[in-house]
Image 1 (spheres, rainbow, N blue to C red):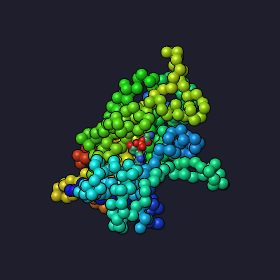
Image 2 (cartoon, helix red, strand yellow):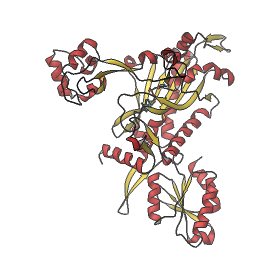
Image 3 (cartoon, protein in one colour):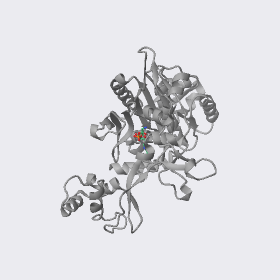
Image 4 (spheres, rainbow, N blue to C red):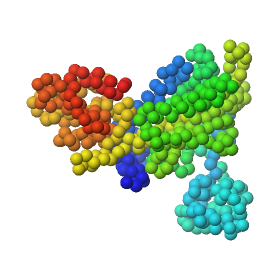
Length: 471
Ligand code: GAP
């Protein structure tokens, strides 16, 4: 099966089974925004819950939930007002807008060579495209990918990716605020609040899950690049001399997290940023990448941010953000090791990773092999037939299990078809009430991946599931 066909199938399954819908679909959708349906919201919550447990059920990491709107000076200090931009060009004919780098990607290598030759330019086309003077020469030679006209582009202009809005009733410059483009800044500005209220000593971290917004020019690949998304970020504050050790530690921890939730190891890799391409604040950076059907893509960034963020907030706020190290009897601004995961991107990676098609007894089965901890529904309860007291027995099991698990009752159609529906939803266990149940109180538990069936006393079901799911 071609990789991109897989993508189409997953997007279609996501809609059909209630994982992901287009935002405001009845109005034609809103580009770059998605809604999570009944199964999808469970999966998303489970991913966030596993991250939260892995990161904050430790004695050296505290949780935080900062507001989305922050003081506008925060974004000046962070560098976002000045630097969080993409160079853009507009086609003067058809008015389509393109990101300069994406425009470069759209042009075939052969064409690039020809253009460079005709202009007697030397070097990397994409890099030259960002070079002011040479850029205008190149743009004059390029056809608009939308209308096909040649040389109709405006000069490149920087476009800030932050969404702007206003606080209060007056829409003027003094009331501008931004929807946060990352959750990290809420953590930086609360560094001393958390440290002192939780009586933490270095090294310690602050973790936060929340929405972030970026006015991406080119949204693409389903949930990969959206305008509204969720991040799961942790900032770990360390003594400057210990930064390298903690950077390596968090790299290992974060990769292990994806593997511990069943993600295929061969589809995960680190992509270390070359030193000459590091962001201005970073001493070291790596991406954890997943091999999506459209290629390798970043799902999490791990950065050694040095003391850049706290120093800038100290400078812009005029408030000291130094930490007093009682052991060393010295004051300093800590270094920060950041782990920055996209909940929405991880979601997509977990969904794709779980997707399998296979043939069973001559029939096609689609199965989402989620780790049971992530599965939206933990168990389905199925009375074999709708008579002889089986539905009642099954309902009692449902009521009992519902106290601890998200379960689903289904008495419609042949049991084989009901199993298939649960396979497609990724439900790890199907519990069937049959004739034997009425005689001895045992039920069949069918495991999703192996399709093996075992008999379990109905009174033991809760323990059985807790052990299997390892909740
Ligand atoms: N605080 C650092 C930071 O925000 P980033 O590399 O810009 O770093 C971190 O983003 C993670 O957030 C990415 O690895 C990705 O998972 C997610 N992310 C970023 N932009 C996104 C977008 N437009 N749509 C979905 N997820 C996004």
